[in-house]
Image (cartoon, rainbow, N blue to C red; front, side, top):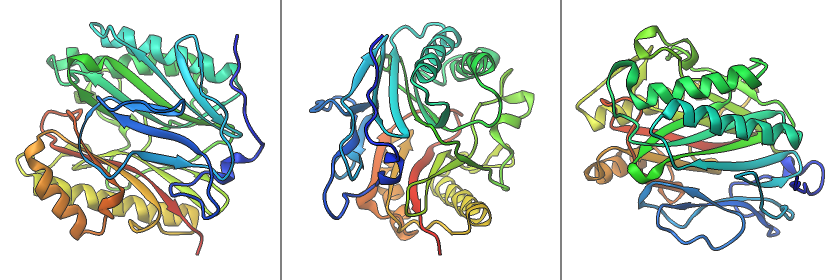
Amino acid sequence: MSSVEPIKPGALSALRLTVPAGGGEHLARFRSAGAERTGTRDFLLPLELLEGHGPETWWLGEDAAPRTTVAGVQAVAAGDLLLCEAFEADTRDPRKAARALYVRLFEFLQAHDYGHVVKGWNYLADINQGHGDTERYKQFCLGRGEALDAAWNHEYLPAGTGVGGGPDTGLRVTLLASRQAPRVIENPRQVSAFRYPRQYGPQSPSFSRATTIGNGRGELLFISGTAAIVGHDSLHAASIEGQVGETLRNWQSLFDACERQCGARPSLANEAWYRVYLRHPEHLDITRELLGVNGLPLERVHFYRADICRRELLFELDGIIGVRPA
């Protein structure tokens, strides 16, 4: 088996969301659907980009290892961190596809001694098709849950995002893994996703609301895809304005929880990358305006056309934010 060659120990402390003052190499760039991959550290975000200022780039103050492919898993490593992705084109059975893909990824991480998943990004074709327990997202959750049950020690669940694309999206999963265990943060305004009641499917979604890892200057906060859900109920079903506002209140609640656990409060103005998922492209202008008024630095935001995991949801926001100690 080929190996992913890590670089210097402790590279976790060098991870940055902006270019280091002295310059540096990037760990990864994320390219949208249709964009040309220009380097070995490019990762695909298989959605239509509606708006964004250059590719989302994660930086290091030192070199990253070359991208390596092993048994269908592509990865790049930097000391204590590893970013990997895998793809399955055939998703006629989302449960089977998710189980097989996650087993492959977990076996890869175990073989390379990266024992902790910090966050996962999941992109599934036609995520809202089907009804009741046959809905494709619910079947995906079943398959992912079965893979977790087989491989995970249930110590915690990582942060996660799951949205849908068109028929050609297949199933693409990107995982950020670490040799250090992350800190898990839940949102007191929301029922934890892994404790949702049975009405949301036979397997609750297997993710935490947020996780943090240290990066030498404080923490990096990885927020799961967050929507207008309070408790476990979707709110403002017909209002993009209402959903954006409720989502931002959920983020502020997460910031409160992060401050209690980490001793420092995140700020939207900190170094960050944000991903906005919109069900309807015609909501781009009003969403941009609302986010800008509420303090998101729009030059750090990428807007994508995506199907949200619940049919009534129009908007979802996820991101990574630097959290510096007081």
